[in-house]
Image 1: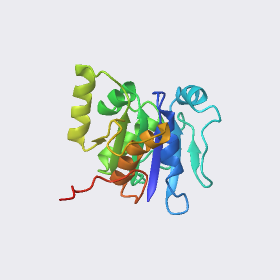
Image 2: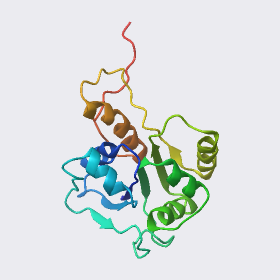
Image 3: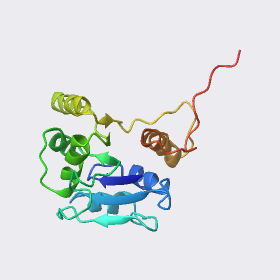
Image 4: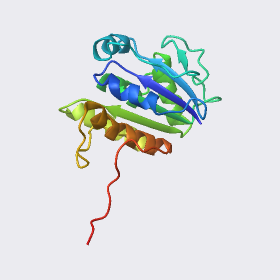
Length: 185
């Protein structure tokens, strides 16, 4: 599977890192594109920087020469993690000023999987309306709302509850977080 991971300037760089840690670059073709502000957030939130697995290809956000910038070569799936509300709004309205936004537009128009992981709270009506447009267009809105029923003990375990759901929606098997199970009688 060809997977594009887009990282924006929203807080939550650890979500992107944990996703990359759990995508096998030998089994999947993985591409990365970062928004203009993503490196600044990464510098604050990931003091060691973003660790890219071997084989991952990075692309400049201002280059339209990336292989996924055209409907003739779309990725199978794109994950915007974390996703700013500004990015979400621009995607919702087809504003494709850079390769990150163009790729999201391509993914939607080619009916591929687009997963957006917003980490904003509270939400305004504008945010909700943009989410509605994206849902109607076929995107998956997967907010960074962690689960606590399994009793996570570390920040990474909390993050992994969200990343596990992203991997589930990509169709990538994982054991990151415990699964809900039936009650014992």
